[in-house]
Length: 271
Image (cartoon, rainbow, N blue to C red):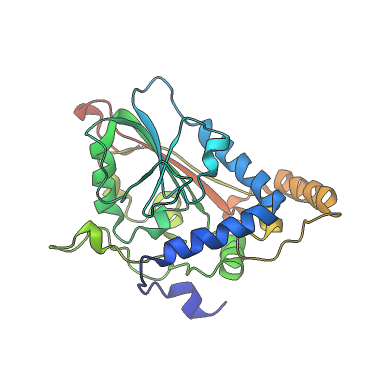
């Protein structure tokens, strides 16, 4: 992995996202092990949904919309109109009315937000009191840096400042392609710029190992658990997860984050 791969967060055309969606659909169809791993990730997300909160459950940046296999009533959205998704949405300018959403789910979307603080204000607007923002993101542990540096073409962006707010005059329609895979690790796990989360309650920032995910090669890497070795490789990966789960700073590859909008203004704080 070169230093450029680790730090280059240069912009590109926003249409690149849709190109990736189409390419990922092809990988999804030919990799049953990848589909199984993603279902397990979606089950982790589903376990964080509080059904007592009124409002819609919405995923932003749904890509292929696979979350419906686990959460059927989740509304799937993306920047681009695709026939398998429910609607088109821009994370910086959502069409939902104030307080109408109970949960916003972002799976591998946070690290594409060039201006996360600007997006957070929009998320807070549409979420109901007590509503949750649930993120699933890369965890750039020691091994995570290696995995995402080798398996994925997107940069890690670990050495760049975080541009929290969009500049004056910027419009959501001007959003470009951006990626910094280490962004969530820096903010939610390492606590970088934690003061920026004022007005949110950080319920959970849980890094976890998933060697089974690594063996799938993700969407763009080589698969090493294909038949006839799948069952053997899966058992080895699960054993590794059991043995190494207690060392997330070294071995975590995924990060699950839950932020909660306070139910009242008096509870607006970071915990």
